[in-house]
Image (cartoon, rainbow, N blue to C red; front, side, top):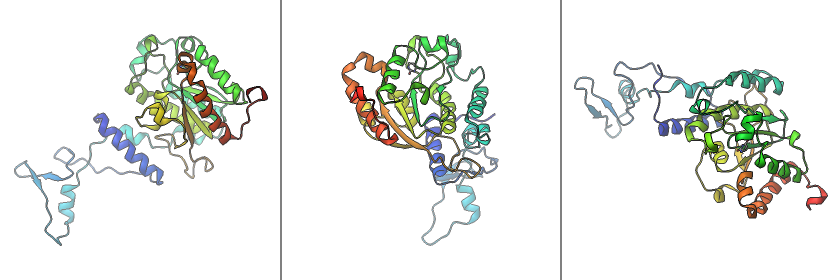
Length: 303
Ligand code: URA
């Protein structure tokens, strides 16, 4: 059974793999496990006779012998899932985005991967909209209305999101809308980090299929999960980020050579704007930045 890594180590390793992916490196090889159990020993190695740790310090000018090097560079015990994440996904060999999204939905199945499946969800809320959308909105997770109807942003926050989309001069049907978690957290609580990390790989795959020009993260949970960074909304808003869905092999010859990631902007969650309408002006600034990027013009009544 694969051992589970400490979450911090897992995050660091995932970040390193992403870094290599960005340089076009996708293939990683694992050393076979050593007979001493394959524990990590970066700076020191186990003395095979005594079983204690011994530092391999090199004399000036001494080159490390292959034997010594092999002893120092020990295999890292790796969670298989990390490597699974960088393999080509089944939908990536399908050119029709409708079919590709269907493959992801089928893969999700009647998901029981996190605790949300047993905390009162009625159904999985996958995502909705134009499978070739240039603009994608990502929220936090379904609320009661979304859970009942199986569609994201159909409640009060959804009405406001619809108005925001209209103000940008487009229709809801033209964009794609999804959430970080696909099951309703009980009592509309904020999804836990582990729930976000378990569910977001499916969203990453949806983004890679839709291939938008811009993703708008609605609120801090969406922004922090997509960007894998922790900062306040004040720090996150007001600029574009270069975004590539984590764990997806893109810019690969076997895949679409024309999509190499997209821009990501952060704005306030519509539910927050309902609570504090004074921030609507700030959100409108964020959307105007997105409109400029997409060459959209607000309809006359908004100007
Ligand atoms: N809030 C969200 O984050 N997503 C929804 O789908 C609805 C409300």
